[in-house]
Image 1 (spheres, rainbow, N blue to C red):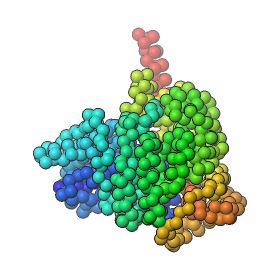
Image 2: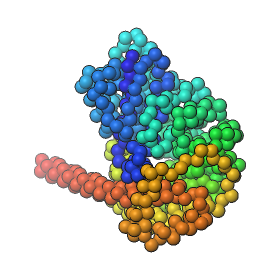
Image 3: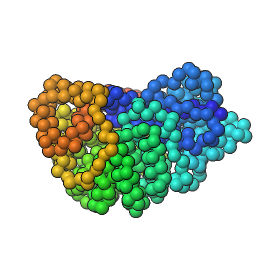
Image 4: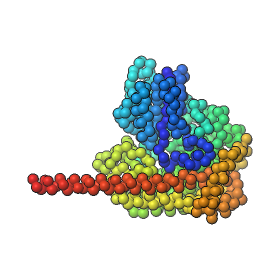
Amino acid sequence: MKALLIYPRFQDSFWSLEKTIALVGRKTFIPPLGLLTVAAILPREWEMKLVDRNVREVTETEWNWADIVIFSGMIVHKPDLLSLIREAKQRGKSVAVGGPYATSLSHECQEVGADYLILDEGEITLPLFVEAIERGETSGTFRSNGEKPDVTLTPIPRYDLLELDAYTTMSIQFSRGCPFQCEFCDIIVLYGRKPRTKTPQQLIAELEYLYDLGWRGAVFMVDDNFIGNKRNVKLLLKELQPWMVEKGFPFSFTTEASVDLAQDQELMDMMVACNFGSVFLGIETPDEDSLKVTKKFQNTRDTLSDSVDRILHSGIRVLAGFIIGFDGEKSGAGDRIVRFVEKTNISLAFFSMLQALPNTALWERLEKEGRLINDSGNGNQTTLINFVPTRPVEDIAREYVESFWKLYDPVKFLDRTYRCYRILGSVNYPKKEKKGKKKLDWIMVRAILVICWHQGILYETRWKFWPYLFDMIRYNPGGVISYLTICAYLEHFLDYRQKVKKQIETQLADFKALQQQQKREIEASQKEAIAS
């Protein structure tokens, strides 16, 4: 069997970072770990090719070569994924599709021609799919019926299928699932509330494979809550630290975690010793009432700003997600988020309007209440809220656009990035002897020159950029490259905040026009009823 694995193109989003990625000569941010794992689970005798559409197009030779085309993607991939399924069917190919989007909205994939729906987690459903193929079945839906796989049996992803030089960051996974019950989150729907982890030896074997392939640099631990099972995480870190020392710290790690990370100093110290440089926190909002409404109770057990401060002063840079549009939210929520971000020195603040995602507790509640407008929310930052909120949509959208604009004001962004790295520079890190430290090449030098030209000469940041850079060289010399990397993100956000403003305002105008039309239709219907 000749299987062509295709990963759809991301829409332009907060994380697409096109201009920033182009500066360092790469094509995209992170590889499709799901498809790499699929390739490892499929029979070894199958021939496989992988194309990431964020890196390049599928060639005619590849289309013609394939016996079957396999797709995977998230809800944010929906437009390109559905288009690719149609194209594959027009070319007469058998099509199989899986991943979070297909699992949540399988009927949409089936409607455009998908033959095989490989839903839920592939360790269970991919073997069922292969058995169907071997029996000569030309279609089928494969589900796990609530069973969760033992991830200690998951094989090493097929990183060898990647064009490694196209990516700024590699991806790896230690656990699946999250113990919390946030109403808006689809992770617990897809992967359950009992975190399942790989063994330390298993994960280190995956890192060893990446190391042998020649990868050096950033690795994103894609767990939705890396510390969901703290006991197993500490067992991993205990074995990872000597491996990192032996290899000369070839990787720097980023991951996602719940805010209660701040309550465990031992865990933070172990992460820093293993070269975890940053963590993404789902803060969502500083408004405690909204956190309770959405059942994110873990964020109400301690002062959020204190938690962020403890993590930062432990040597881990904080990235964070924020949401506007919760039920019962009071006016000014956007400004409160901006003030919180400024106070806590969070350089990268992922900000979006609340979207009701399929099959979540929020989605089910809103459906019962008759408040869903669109039942396939995509989570994109340029998409208007997809349900009827408890305060006017116009107010939420206006606050969102204004706050996004303020968050990525060039001077404010530079200010808090500088403050963040000055704090990191004051941390007494464990000594790390790095072997074969990567030297600056021409691409990196050019990127630094572009940043210095834009932010030190052209932009309004010019008056602060140079004093801040000289202070960094003096007080945090080891963090200068990382600091400039975050500065480079501004190249993306200056354009992206324009797109957010334009697209949200356009959708809001369309929403108002639809409301007016519905009002006229109701009034006309009432007049007809009176006349009759």
